[in-house]
Image 1 (cartoon, one colour):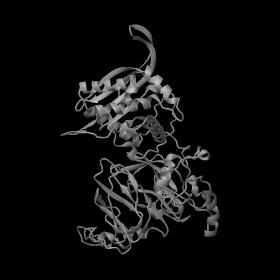
Image 2 (image 1 turned 90 degrees about the vertical axis):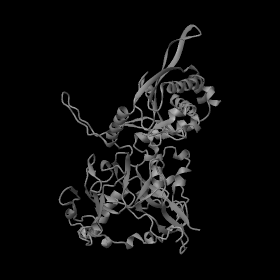
Image 3 (image 1 turned 60 degrees about the horizontal axis):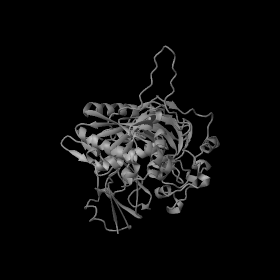
Image 4 (image 1 turned 45 degrees about the vertical axis):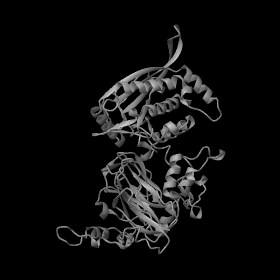
Length: 543
């Protein structure tokens, strides 16, 4: 029975998706876990895995084309199966991509075949591949090379990380799809270039690519009297240098998505056991992996320790110095300015008695394999309070207010470039251990720029905590489209009045910034009252 694969909704704001690349063509055998295509959304480009076994019978959206969410993307079934009723009678999309040419493209004004691409390809030597700056999000117009993992002259294998590309959304690893030598780098580390301009050129060692780059850029230096027999031994040390699984010359059989997930989680791919065809490692193998005692210190992704947090800055006393803005810093400036100038902010501040919360945390952390922070307790209490006050868990639109059914709490995390907000989905349904583990994992990956785009979207409320820096009180700018953000200060030991007596107590100040278009003053105050009750009487969270 044929299975209809529809265009997936990969983000909350996605209405249609663009097929950046097909990894299978019509007629190919497909296994569960195989990467079918790379789908470009309004946030990022994501691998799309097959959940079925069979033959790819039909492609509904060609490479480079777009289609609405839930429309037919592909059909998988048995070879020769009749699928005319499933694809709506259109057979044009089932033509294999390699059988299509540019000869059918015509110039609108002259009605003559467009030969520009064919002419250009004639100038490219055999075996040479031109790599262009990829479009990694719909809003991306240029990309910045945060780091090169290869230099001109290095040997490159399919699947090797060429560079880290910084967009207006996040930093993403960019893999090579070709084998050869890196002949040319079009954008130096720290530099930016427009989408679709030449990023790099890969091909046989010593190939002259000057006609492609038109003289500019960094070319590989030809080795004296280089021959095919001499070039192979020279390339061998380069291949053996990386510590990745491909170091032995044989690549581990692993899907691109599974490889990326393993890198994000710090899992050595050599410790994974594949359940796919011929032992291939797929997504579910990474998700179900449990580190043993021998893998506690799983290897970090190659280059992680050497990654610079910021461009080097050499300050000279008495002179001004400049640091170019990163893409992350630019987008933070844009979004916070929009929030501050469009949403009418007001602030509510309350002081919390934390004595019982301190006792409760001590008892909880006395349990085996349990260690939670006060921030975890605040997140849990906040999520539960939002369930009781749905107006605070809402979003303003021009003609309506959307009341969100899920409680998705964004947790502000400081990174060298500024601030990111990873999201805890359905935080009200998570226990303390789940909240603690998720916050630690995402905060760690945020600082190493390892978060995925979909992990930073969909928040309905945000929490910012500067208490660990000794800050007692502060206010935050609302992280739109949220309507409120909670600022958490430090726990301070000071004299307080209890039962008419001055005693030593522990207090913490919370500041709630609200969008007055959505959250009225009384509504915000009632939310803080509930939150105060949960923190001052932790047992009430169980009721």
